[in-house]
Amino acid sequence: MPQFRLIRRMYPVSVFVAVLGCAPLANADDMASFATGGYALGLRTMSEMRKIDTDGDGSISKTEWLAYQEKVFSALDKNKTGVVDEKEFLTPSSDLAMFATGGYARGLQTKAMMHRIDTDGDGTVSHDEFIAYQSKVFDMMDASKSGAVGPHDFLGK
Image (tube, rainbow, N blue to C red; front, side):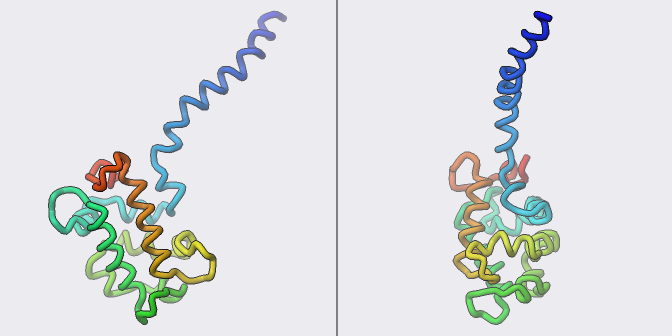
């Protein structure tokens, strides 16, 4: 019986050690908890990175990222009101197809992504909500907080 007492006393310690060991893995990719899988998969490709990297230096600055997201919002906001309703958000956009990859557009234009971006829950995505969300996405990818994201961080490797 003494061996069972030892095991019982060691159990909380082993659970604590296991949790500590796994904690870094939980933060390894916050994108998974922040965005849908389709959005993350469509975004995190080399072809999408090349489209966003307008100066061709192999990394994406926050300025490049936000300029790209301004174009995305403009393509979604078909009636140019500064607010995108569900119909606009979910309708495929030929303007978006001209500069974004199909995987990114398909991953973005879902009800689940719209609801994640619509922080005030009014059923629409305003320009400010969209840019604030995309700013958070960039900040998540910019693990080194350098203001630029290289292929390693952008691809989530």
